[in-house]
Length: 111
Length: 115
Image: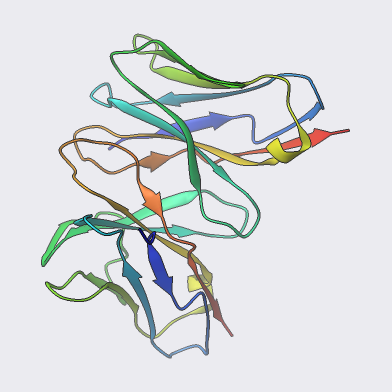
């Protein structure tokens, strides 16, 4: 089955700096890669996703890149703000149609 | 359009009791997924169901855990003879179709505490 690894587990940046979170996956058949944001005690919410036919996607301050050859994808947050502080999960899905999540990155944006 | 509804939001059980968690998917969604999240950990897939069918239960423990999604009514995750290690947040998610792999919409979760 699919195995998703995520790094780093914790990330602290100053407000206004950029944050990068990286994930690798094992199943070459995976074709959908979403990123979820989870605030403390809340449900995971989709913030951006990318499909295997696209190398990069951007939505305001958030961007995701995908390298299918190397089987890794990354989340980039620019101009970070305190409200970006949360746990971020990458995920991948392929033929099984179930999402396999990474272990999460706790992002702390300090003033 | 109501989102994914889970209840109860919080459930306390003593060891050996049964826990029943309910999930009503978003309107028009026929696919339901259950995930378990231990404190400070990620989301672990448990089971994927369609109406009256279990599609993939590879993440579900073989004993004490069962899930169903009947023709009428919510999906139910049932944990028999709970143990302290079952304490976790259980999230349900739904999607309109598995063919068009896309966003999973999560409920607010049911937090089980086993005393």
